[in-house]
Length: 224
Image 1 (tube, rainbow, N blue to C red):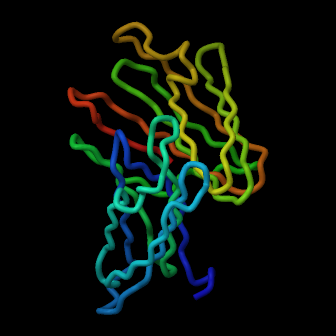
Image 2: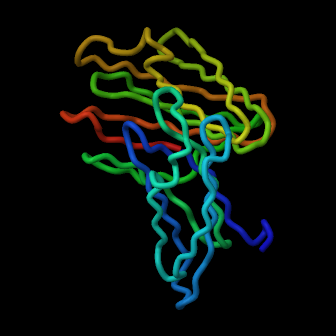
Image 3: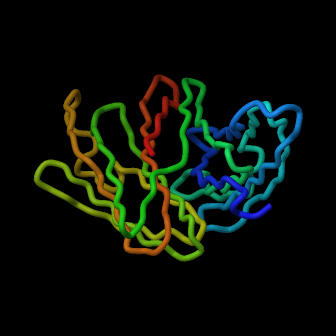
């Protein structure tokens, strides 16, 4: 089977300490009783191969993979065990990741595309009980450099990020831009983050939002 015969999806995945991740492999239609092969490669935050698995699912069923069981080789980065999953199935298949806690779950697809010709923008609302994370996966075999600029009021601070080949990185927005975090209780502050790169190739980026609850897990949602 050649690359032209495959659907390839790059996903940011996480297993600790906030959420667990489940991969869904969705066939295009009911295709009888045959089976289809799916290959999953997990790279840790530094781009090292953490695991590779080949699985077969009946082509009339959705394949489900609990990623925690194959992410043991991923190290902690920014206090989070996360990585870059590369999923390949026959053409027509779709791949989705569900991040979930005890309080709720969010189904997310592939990250937004970031290239030298295409920037990404995400709205941000600084408010009590909210936290934001920017998650990146480097789909290339070259080091990528990314600029994250926050536009809020009359100021536009920025931070620079280096992502190893095939690696992943996470930015906690409130930590990177502490002047805007917290704020007065009950007061919201609106802004947006512009993310750009001059590196060649494609970088995936997603905004992960955490809503605090009475438990430690919280409820997560994602934009990508």
